[in-house]
Image 1 (cartoon, helix red, strand yellow):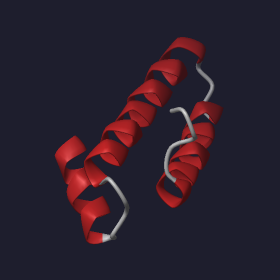
Image 2 (cartoon, one colour):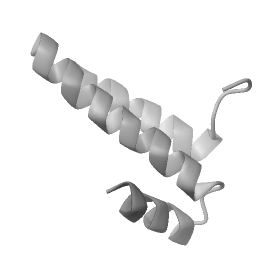
Image 3 (cartoon, helix red, strand yellow):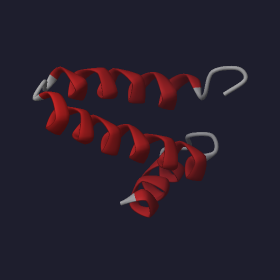
Image 4 (cartoon, rainbow, N blue to C red):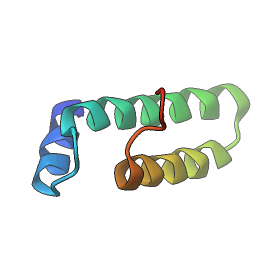
Length: 63
């Protein structure tokens, strides 16, 4: 899945597609774990919002 994300991001001309793909994959995995632990699907929305910011803006300074 990570490689597929990197390919899609590269095609979309997103900067550093491999790095963004890894970060997005971690967001997806983390959201799934938190949903399983807490039973709160709101983690999905939070991860989606973070993913959008990450793709549009890149990582935060110092990150």
